[in-house]
View 1: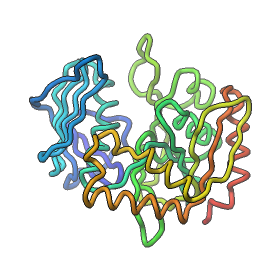
View 2: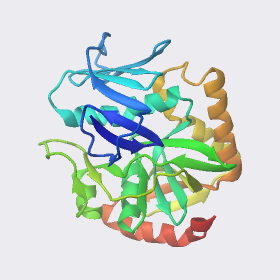
View 3: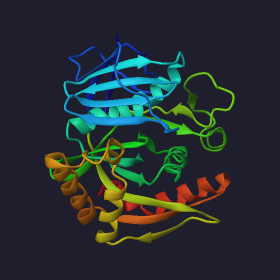
View 4: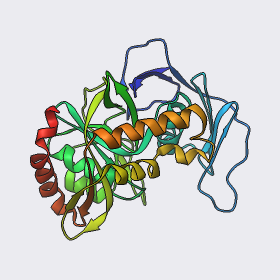
Length: 300
């Protein structure tokens, strides 16, 4: 059994997860085991199937595997492939996020970096450039806190994130331009669109949020516009990670907590609508300008 820590959780896993930071063997909040999982595979060409039920969460990907996430913290992996990279992508994305959701943790679809003692969040749809923006900030000296899944909590009255792991899914071009010295996890595959790269990181405690950036596309140059609380609230709800888990995911007490968290973020955390430059070579300049402009956020 391998032992890790992410999102404030002690994780024990039969599957090696080099994307995560190693941890001493402790009482585990989450255990990941191999076993058989009953359930259907996606139909009609859909890439995955996710079902929230009374037992927890069931997830399945064709040619990758079936996964069962229990409220007790047990995650069962039933592989349909020998490619452990594909299994890890599923585990460290929707599967682990599913357990956080079952715990009642509000989640956003985005990436986060640390500047000073604050977190900057990059939120947006799939392919909007969240990981690329985080990589540009990492190349400028920021610490990566999370990629794809942002776990939120209120820490002593402040809005904070729970650091996940300092690995980013990047295209080969973005990796070579922004983080050429980063550790690539796993052997390269012909035709792989994205690979995971790891940065050194130390943050494990909740990190107060300094600002949020909502990615709306790419242009010839970077631009940003300050958002109103009402606009921010709409985008936060629209980019809730739990929407991946079905219509019932944000009902009841879980939905109420998520709504209250988003409302607090919209009221108290500054937010900008952000356009990224469409040329990779312009991203270092974008990162430097962003850090200079928002450096005041580093200490609250």
